[in-house]
Length: 344
Ligand code: NAD
Picture (tube, rainbow, N blue to C red):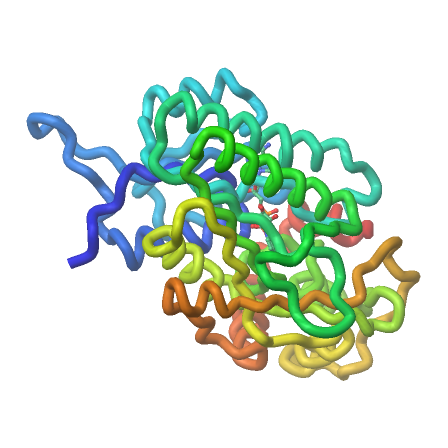
């Protein structure tokens, strides 16, 4: 029998990865994700989601598990709101996915990134301390290490971010590290590589490419498409996060990679082929300023510590992703979802 899940608060649970994690938690870990309350007064969900529902947040991602969580539309930067939620819900575990996440937006204007990704994390940390939570998990990013032209980044590699998004995520990691040392704060940091899969907002490369195909347009590819990324299917990422939540050691950081390293141009061609359109249906556009040339993670620590490895190859993941978007064109074509993405 699986261990009973403690009351868990998921910040950013209406986002792309956060919602995949919540679906996994509910479907696999606790299909009856409800705790009995005292004296038969009914039941309450033991998963609490806090999300500001920015342009990137969407409760539609959680439709299949509706009713199995409590939801609060709130900003993690709002200390008062966080305190009220913590006071009422008394979570024991907090997992933070909430963030501004798109590098291009951070280059245009870093303000929201500094606010949510640093100050928002500070508010969560202080609220967690005040309410004595048992475990805090921060979802960080491989981008905090900067670029690596050869070899891989381990968890001990220096933090050397090259764009405002990455810098804001690195700052949060450092703040958490300081809380671990200063207050013996019970945190774990997880650094996944590039995620892809169903329900991703179409400003990121893979769903953008599908959207462009649906609109009969060419996918914009930065520079000559030679930048290399490591790709992790979102459901594998969610299972890695769940394994770290259960078996990870407090105070540690864990990389979550896949070994599926590919040049952007090759990833786009693979996807175009899968979508049944000519592999040249893309156009090169001027490179992103400060564009990191290559990311690659050493994730042996996670593999050994939590006995996790991704199940989905890039080839299979791209097929599953393309099939999902073609079946769910309606979501991709919603004006909320593609107006801003198309104006890149
Ligand atoms: P996303 O943009 O899809 O979702 C972010 C969620 O956070 C949204 O639901 C949004 O409404 C919410 N949010 C934003 N600001 C908030 C605030 N101030 N208060 C409360 N909620 C707020 O992002 P994602 O791709 O699901 O990424 C989740 C986490 O994983 C982020 O921390 C990101 O840095 C990290 N990460 C993402 C990737 C990737 O490839 N997508 C890779 C590595 C790490």
